[in-house]
Length: 292
Image (tube, rainbow, N blue to C red; front, side):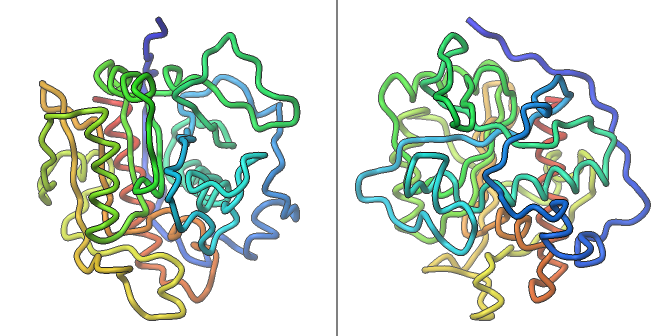
C-alpha cells in the first residue's frame, strides 16, 4: 500500500496580491510563452517537488451534462467529452503560476491527472497525459462533481485515501439538482459522515491569507450575463467533511466556479475581485491540506 507523504512547506507572501491583467500581463498567449497548445506536456517537468497540482479524472454519469462549458477543457486527453476536464489545463497552470509568484512553495509547473483505478505498475497509454495513482498525491481538485460516479472499488479507494490524510477540493456545481447528484457519489464514499457549513473563523480560511467575509465567485458567464449564480444556486456554500479528529478532508465549493476565475484571471472583462478571492481560497486550501 502506498502511504501519503507530506514535505514541510515554508510559505511567504510577496508584496501585495494582484490577480488581474497586471498579474498576468499580455493575456494567455504571452502567459504561456506564445504557445496556445494546452495539450502540450513537458516530460522534463516530471521531477520531484514539494507540491503537485492534481486533478481527479472520474467516470461521468451516463446522463451527465455540461462538460464543455466556456473553457479549453471540454475534451480530455483522448477521453472525449469529459466533465472532469472542465477549464483544464489552463485553470490549473494559471493557478500554479500564481502560487509560484505568491508563495515559496516549490510546486511542479504542470498539473497531474490522477485516477482512482490507476496503480503505479500500470504504464500510461502512449501519447496520453500520464495518469497516476491518487495515493501519491495528498491534494486533489475535482470539478463538475454533479456528474461523477464511482464503482464500489473506486469509492473505497477514495474513502481510504481521504482517511489516510488526503485532501479533496470540489468545485463548479450549482443548484439543488447538482447538489443531490453530487451527494449520490459522495455517499458512496462516506455514507454517514456529516457535511457542515464552514464559518468565517474556521482555520482553513486563515492558514495563509486571513479571509473574512467571502462572496460568490462566478464563472466566466458573469461577463455576459452579469449574474454571479447559475441555475438555482443563488447562495454560495462553503462546506466540508471532516475526519474523526476534526481535520477537513473534503472542501466543498458549491454554487461557485473558482476554476473559471483562475482560468480567466488574464481576461480584462472578468472582475479582479473574483479572481483574487479565488486564488486566496485555493492557496489557503492547499496550505491547509499540506499542513493538516
